[in-house]
Amino acid sequence: MLRTFLILITLVICESKSESSQAFAHKTETVLPVNVTIAQKIGNEIGNEACKWKVSQLGSGDYTSIIEALDEPCSLTDGYEILLLDSIHSENLEVNQNSSIVIKGSNDKPTTWGLIFPYEEIILLKQGFLTLNNIEFDFSYQKGSTEIILPSRYLICTEGVEFHPTLTIMKCIFKSVSGITENNMFQIQIDFASQMNIYDSNFTGTGTDQPSNISLILISNCSETNIKNCIFSNASFISVSSAVFLIADKDNGSFVVSDCQFINIVSNGEQTTSALSILGFASFNSEISYNNFTNCTAINSSVGALFIMDTYTLSNQHIISSNTFTNNYGNYSGAILLVSENSISNYSFNNNKFISNGNNQQDGIGQDAFLSFNNTQDEWTIDSISQMLQIWFNGSVTNAKNDSVYFIVTKDEVVQMSGSISLPQSSGTRKISIKLIIGIIAGVVVLIVIIVVIIITVVLCKKKKQKFNYSDLEKKSLLDRPYQEKA
Image (cartoon, rainbow, N blue to C red; front, top):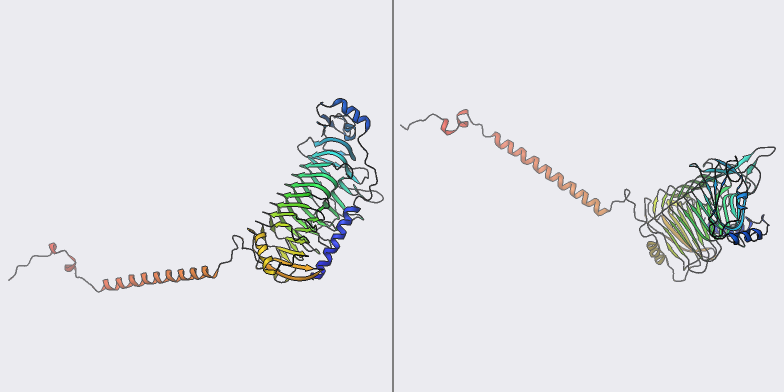
């Protein structure tokens, strides 16, 4: 089974690189610089306030489309602010200008943005700084002679090979539809971006009982990625991609995923798909902290919740701390799978909490974490690795039995050594030590002896008192008795 695992790891490296490179193979347009006329107008209007436009397809705004609003020249420093007045908006938008653009739903309930005509995406970002706020993006079915999904590939995507745009998403909602299509689809797909920020947003599937090949997020070739306070939930994927798939193939990149919830996610892929996957083919740092992974299941894959692969040769830093993993399941580990070909990277798995995770291994060994080290340093031994892992997992607790963290060391795909460590028991499920048990028993015995002595003492006192049966005269005081003179 370990050999099968190593083969799958080799396959996922190849397929992940292929997925990242092929995802944009269909797009052959050349990214053009800012329109010259617009650039000239911008030069004349620098210092003006941001262009604030209201867009309504019902006719109550300044424009009926976002494209029309963006045709107005605005200051590079202030940029555009576009308010969507309607509850429903339909438009295919390509952003290809070096401007700051904010598009915001103006109602309390997010504006629903979809398509009524077939396009590959709702929004294509090629250059600029785009912020989306308070908007719901949906896939939908268009019925006709043949039923098709709109859009056909992505809700939002970037194509920034030349200009490396920045995308920020705040308080938005993303929804999928069920069904299997020829191509893998994504709610968001980012490639060659300078920065990707997602805050306070919800990503949902169609339920764990309705499989789909629409994954949630795929990010590659991005210098900086921040995903904070988001919810990813209720989805079942039939895809080579994980629900959230972050690929580091650009040097000095960083991934931060914090305060997020991954709930009820089923991965049906054949390789190492999971709720969250981070693959490193370049120098990068990652921080996965204060997240909750709950009911993340891998049907055929190795891990349910979190998969991390580091293949680079320089020192990277990975902090996976203060997360809670509850009721996750995978073939090798329910919670964490680490594949490291970098023996000088720094890892921290401190202060994580593992609750009722499971795997398909004998006695549940490795159900909380399965760590695979490839091409390690010669001085590594089972004891030194075990001591290292005790430091890595400092402060982490579990309700599992012993050996819930398992590791293997391979060289040229051959297992050289393996071992495991046990994490401390979490509060409420802590095992009682033998000394504590003996102390409790001794205390109970002493208490019983004391109670028996008290009972015996009371009984003896009562019996002794019954031996003295005074007459009524004897019970009277001496002063009350009649006086008798001596003869």
